[in-house]
Length: 225
Image 1: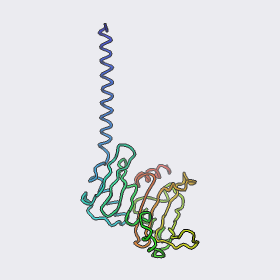
Image 2: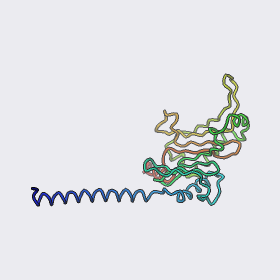
Image 3: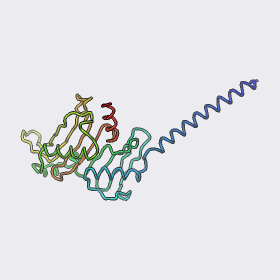
Image 4: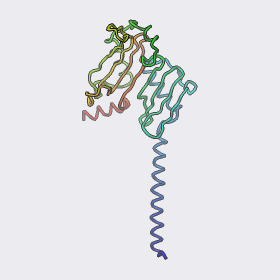
């Protein structure tokens, strides 16, 4: 038969274990509730982001214009939402900023072959002007080339070329990449990347590998301490 003392200790240990699980669960719930995971709460951030990039979206932006929403899954950091005009946004719920944007109706990767062909030699700007546009929009988003860990940006203009032929015609799409200084040997590790539309004079896509503008500001200030 189990002694009263041993039974009492077992009860105490079990109670402590129960408390630990309960408190841990409450802490996890508190952390989750602090995240912006509701689509309506994300829209002001998306609207502000769109304003900085001069995107053509309805304002004020409401849930009536959202056609697809993929909520935060509890891992990673992003939720996704799509608007009826073909714009998609990845929202970082842990740091409250838009880290990626795509205009599916105008991005080069989403055009048909016939659409690409019709756009040959139609750019209204040069590579230099595309870079100037990209730099202006990067600054409007709150990022700093000087304080970010990036190398000098590269501009790549898309080309139309028929297989087997040497001749190619320029397309009005400019991909501007800021290579990540810490991964300079990695061809796909762009710290910032932007596609500029040389006909519409708009941004077709934007992506950043790390951090919101506020985080980058903190990192840069810490680096100079």
